[in-house]
Structure formats: structure tokens, C-alpha cells
Picture 1 (cartoon, rainbow, N blue to C red):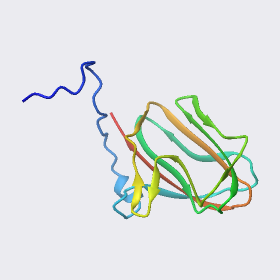
Picture 2: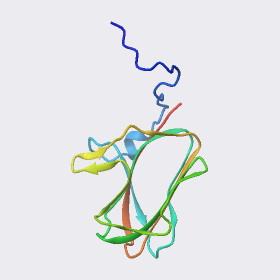
Picture 3: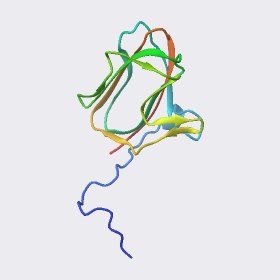
Picture 4: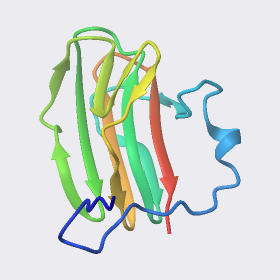
Length: 141
């Protein structure tokens, strides 16, 4: 039996590119995301994550926030502003899930987005001075 998934043709899934440092940079859990600590404060947007190259983006979430914290965020992909929360908004919990979200067992992935050249995430908090950024990206061909 032949199953035809699309009549539109072309496309297909992205092919992973070599990433020899991937295992060393991920959190040692079954979730496989990477984590970096950010020093942020003062309510002024600053670079939280900047990646260049062609890759698949699955997950971005800021954690260890103070509940009801006032934050700002801006995401630019391939030179296009995807969202701009630079006017500010309040995070109701200790997490700000920007792409995908996490449960106690790890990130929940929605399928992934292709980035062709660059990603820039800018972020600011009002009172927090140290938060964590969890993200999952993989280079593709």
C-alpha cells in the first residue's frame, strides 16, 4: 500500500548537519536542550541568545523568573522581527515560554522552525538579576 503524504511535492524534513559539540552543551537529561545562565536586570533589552547559520529551532524558554515579574522580549529571525514585547508584559509564573514549553519531564516540542541565517533573542527583566535560558536548536544542511 502506498501512502501519499502531500500532493504539493518538494520540501521534506530538514537534514541534520554535523554538530560535534552537541552532546557536551546539552543538559544531561532525556530532554536534550541546552541551558545558559543570563545576568539581566534594569528593564533594558540585551542580547540573551544570538545564533548564526542554518538550523532548526524547537524550543526557547526562560526559567527561574520571579512570579509576576515584568519582562521585555524581542525575537528577530533572518532579519525579520517575529515578535516584539519590548513595551513589556508580566510573566504569571516562573517561566516565560517563548517557543514550545516545558513540563516537569522536559520540553514539549511543536515541530520546529527553520532559521536560514540568524536568530537574535533580546530579553530584559525589571528585578531579576540571574535567570536561565533553555533552548533547543540543531544545525541543518
